[in-house]
Amino acid sequence: MEVYFNSEWTKCYDGDSYMAEALIWSQNGNRGASIHTTGITAEEADAKLMGILSELKLIPETFTKDTQ
Image (cartoon, rainbow, N blue to C red; front, side):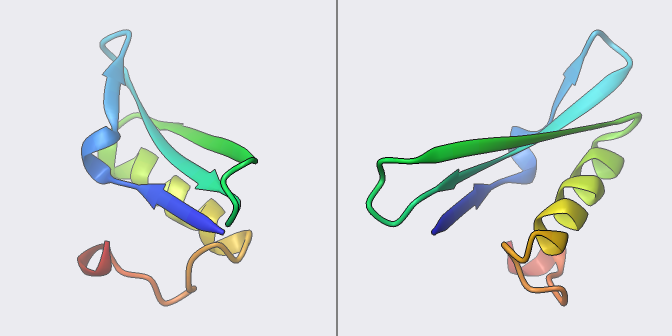
């Protein structure tokens, strides 16, 4: 499984909320999914996304922003 995320993908919507996104692909590429989170700030949306990905065991629990 491959997980793609990038804090530069976090965008402002409606002028007052931010959405972060991660794309998940199967190893053979025939299945995919996306996960979206929202927050009042880009940092909040990114933190929620990292929490969800960690909870789903798609990234290590010790993941830090520096290892993106």
